[in-house]
Image (cartoon, rainbow, N blue to C red; front, side, top):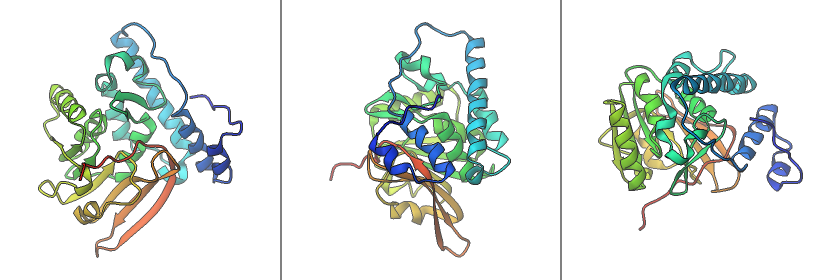
Length: 266
């Protein structure tokens, strides 16, 4: 992704005093708002494999600039292996599939997006999953994040509030034989007690505060990754850790831009 022109955008003005990692993240945010056009025509299997390879190289390059967050060794290799094989294009509406491996979010309809590949890799990495873990995802969306998690853990429980998206994601995950993914259409704010407690929770929409039910459903020793901030304003990707004694530790990592967490009507 090329560095966009900054000009006098008020968002850039607010971000100008950030750390180096924050400044790098700022132009990732700005790329969210750049227009994009999907290339015409179907791609061959070789083309798609090449696109996945380029996607992984781009993730690694970005992660190197975020070493203070990711760690000097970069994104965990098992995550990159999964993303390097998973057909991301299947999770994107046909009209947008030419953008499947672009270094940016892509619209999936209903005002929602599939996150930039770097963000998917980063959020998964921050969970520090183990093979026996049970992970909750709030905001199934396209189903891609759940599909990335599925080979890495024992169970993924994922909730989507928009029925059309939840049903579509369930169908794609079933076609990919992701048998350890449970899906539900519901308000994710309240979590999924029957599936938990959870070793990890990933929230793929921005909340103006951390939902208490999610903290309660996080196991001691567990981690939650959630974007926190006002909708369509500056948000921070936030890491929440629950210690073995139940103490909550919170750390803001970098500025991000996510669609807002949608709640059910009262």
